[in-house]
Image 1 (cartoon, rainbow, N blue to C red):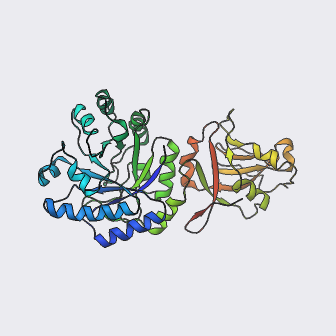
Image 2: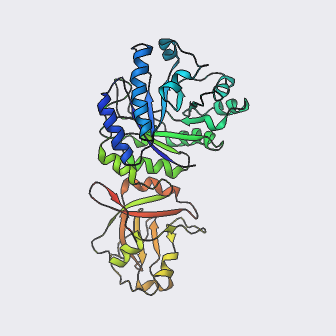
Image 3: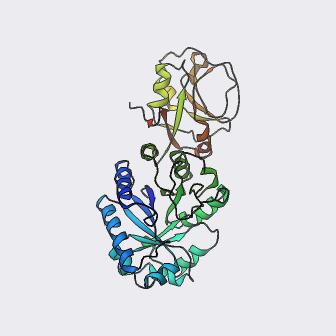
Length: 372
């Protein structure tokens, strides 16, 4: 399933022109999905329809898919029914997110609406809610899942619970989504905004790092910035990430040679299938570079988790093998050449046997992949 990047908009708390500018900037960096809140509307049906329709169709011209966040009170406020999706279809919405659930049969029936408006479910409950809906033969292509976000510090999901909830959807082939938070955005649905992540461990992380983590889990298809407006630097950094394999951001030691940088940055790495707990081994590179000399340097101190080491001339057949350190150890036959950024150590557990991975060099503000 192809993966998407998304942004969030809150038309009842923001300026329409600023929203349009944000849409254009995000689209430039590869964003193609919108979470748009309708939870706060109070202007009456005609005014609401005009405001949202204009914004949604502007986004549609830029190639966005828009999911509207709705609640039962909104249906009462606007005088519309869950049994008739024409209102949302006329606004240009591609789907609606149900803030509350029904009995399973109701949700399944909604996925067959003639307007083909997708029905998105709340993923942040580890119960058999989805199983019940699927029992009623829901129309799977029009059934999505999306985690909640949590404006109050300390209230977002712990990782193990998040993973358990997510597997319920992923194992059924349902498209999944979760939120990361901009570190500068101030706009959300409520008057408390300590960031808007799905995972508590992501609250203080750069959104690009949190997005890497969500994609690395293999449980999330779409990553959405929960608050508005993210900075252009944040959007650009997210747009640069590889959505389909982990690409660690690294900082090189000043003594790293051009050969070592080439081995790190220019090759497609993968972990050996017969793994070790001490390091992640990328062994094919030693074959390609077996004729290249690599004198010892930075090889006497104890290596730490996240260090990138390469076999030096004293390592025999293992010369120029790349290893990503998992457990502290010493070995003078290896040169330390770089280290991944500390915050990206959360990605290490997801490099499984045969996992593909790459490295990008940390630069000021952006991560720019080295081209071969």
